[in-house]
Amino acid sequence: MAENTFPSYKVDFLVQFIRSDILTGQEAKHFTKNDITPTTKPESLQRLYMRILQLLYHIKPEFHYMVTLDENIQYPMLHEGVTPIMSLYLRMCNFLPVCHVYDFQLNDLLNPKAKRTIYILSGIINFLQFRKVRLDMTSEYQQSFRADMDRWQAYNRGVKELEKKIEKLTTIPPEQQAEAKELAAALTEIHSATTHEYQEANALNQQVAEWKTEIAERSQKVTQRKLEVATLKNDIAKLKSQIVESPEELRSEMEKLKDKVKTIKNSKEDVNARLVEWQIKVQAVHQNKADFQLLNKVLQDLEVGMDKMNSQQEKIQTLSAECEKMKKELKNLVTEEGQMKRALEMKMDKLSKQQIRRQKKREMKDQLVQNVLGQYNQVHQKREEIVEQIEEVNRETQQIKARIQALRDVCSLETDKAQGLYEHLLSALDNFHKRIEHHVVQGNEDIVKMKAHY
View 1 (tube, rainbow, N blue to C red):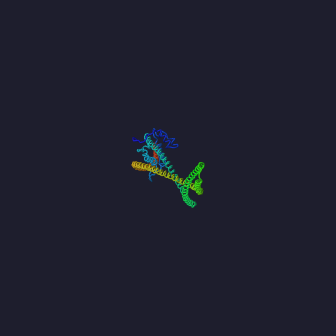
View 2: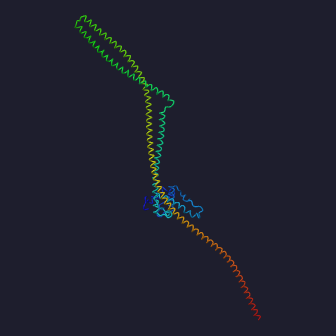
View 3: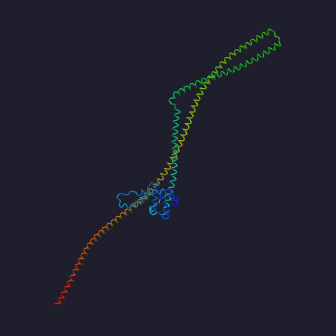
């Protein structure tokens, strides 16, 4: 008790804890402070220890009365009062080292003392409180582990469903495979045609731009020529008004002007022909633009389909990303599970070490108990020898009593015979005395007669 590793509780706290957490029903109501102090009641204390063993190890109180004994034992009624106490003592010796109580004795059951019982009950209640805390912690661990397992299973189910969805989205059904192949072939053909037409359109656009630049340059030249012709006409009108020219010079100038007009007409005709050609080409360009617009519509439709495909691919990517996240979470859960398992293994190792230590202490206690049991067996053997001696003495006393009874019977018979003889002698003596008296009377009469005669 000097090296106490647990607090010593007060009697009121002990009684309250026992009534609330150990005993139930009428036993809790009838258990009071007087059962512990000032004088501890052995019966209530033994009943309390039995209930504690029932609470911890599911050992019912009836089991203490069903301890197996050797067959053909003499006087089994002598063991009926010893077996429950010895069973309770052995089980308490195995249990109390867990509560750090190592000096439990048989006297603590048969003749308990108040301080000693308070010390033992304090150790037991300390262990029960520690057990309650650990049970709550283990229940929390179990609940968290079950929640993690449920999440893990839910994640596995989600991953499997997502994999099935990805397979459904990635795999084309056999009914649509032919259409998909035809669409893919049409897309490739349209892509090739559109690229070729894009190239042709770019070439035509370049040519149209060149022609437009040429037309703009020539239109600028034509406007310049017109301006020059207008200026020349003005100049001619001015010159005509100022100068009286000779007819030859006028003819030469008129011929020159006619030549210039012819050249200008020819250039106009060429320009008009070229304009007609450019208009035809522009109409062809407009037709090409209409064709391009149709192709653009087709391409837009294809782009819509491609957008749909891209959206499906994005969905697939998001689903794959979610799958990766789920896999990462699964890995994290697996690592957490491994850590939990390692922690459990560490705890199990610690518990195994503690159990080994407890086993060693139990072995020491078992050796002590075996020594006590050996001493008890020796005492029991001595007791059996004493019982045999008592039985022999009882047999001898019974034989002596029988002899005495026989002697009493013989004595009674002899006394009866003696009584008969005594009575017969008394009757004979009475008869003899009567005869003597009769003879005396007769002799006196004879004497009197003889005196009278003589």
